[in-house]
Image (cartoon, rainbow, N blue to C red; front, side, top):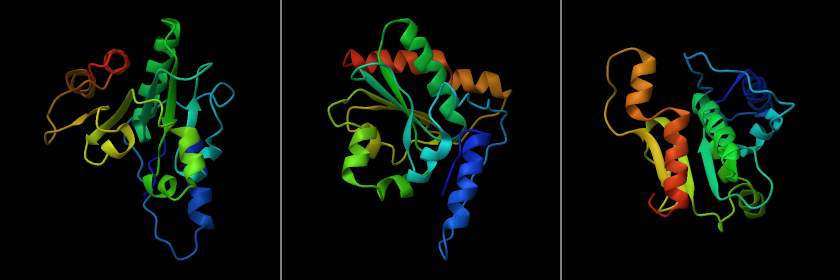
Length: 179
């Protein structure tokens, strides 16, 4: 399964899928309007081929890692920019395919998700199940723990914490050890 973050990752996902012989792949796209990330500012979408990659980083060791997939990546990127303004070093990981990422070498996975950085936040508008393998036992996952709700999308996003402000708050809590 591949959940691309923007049009650039969709194109890369298609390349990955076409190169796979005899291996079924589900390409899961969003119905939401998501921004096309500026790949001059952020990492190239070619990182999708490894299942996960550093899409945005700050100078030096990150204080917190933000991990997202699909339409949630733009929330992580917006939160990253807000954290940078406050002088907080963060790293954003686009993780469109757990399957592909888990097949990479230990060295590569460690370069993306260094074990030394335990302050981690994952953003997933669907189920939170499984994210503990990437955020660790003390990390935070902003996600659904109920079966949906009804209302305007923007109101629901705010209610469930799918906003850059909520991601920033969760990141700060992680850094403070309150996650």
